[in-house]
Figure 1 (cartoon, rainbow, N blue to C red):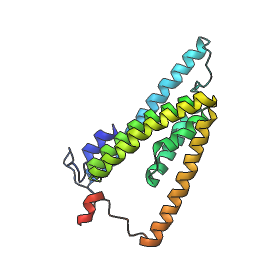
Figure 2: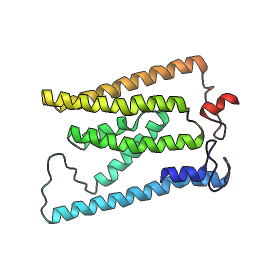
Figure 3: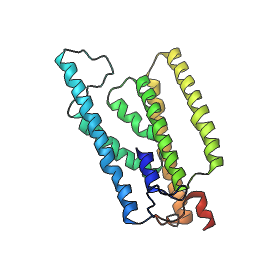
Figure 4: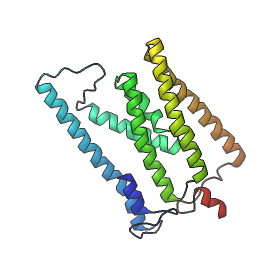
Length: 221
């Protein structure tokens, strides 16, 4: 859905399917259309989860350890938390897994289930983000290919195999939680230090107009 709306909006990497130009009323209408569309999809998903939970309660279903009981409070509270966290993650440039991991643990998911679910969701979010960057003309093909192979493929394989080996050796699922905590702390420190260094060296000069050329294309302006 997000990718389709991006194609309708267009950018320096791909023309708008509707023929709208950046900064026009049509352009901003498509941008703002993301909000009601995604809110509607979230509401439909919440309604489905709530009805399923009510049916299970009616038949006396016994939830297993780690199963989420999607009551009326959870279907409202957690989507709101995820929405706010996702906005912050997008503005700061951190990965979606850093946002989803703590939320899944807050839901009392089993750490292995939390890790696997987060990884699958990050796959879809990352694919959507890459597609939007392509439309906006912000992708450097060489960097994207290198980091996609090293980080996306090899990193995922090593991380999955390593975590599984540690779990089998120690039998302690808390290892995943400690790894996640270390990743969050390390990423936060690196993000702050990088921001301070860039601010000292360039100030606020890295800001560009919304309709200006972006990414690699901006070097030729």
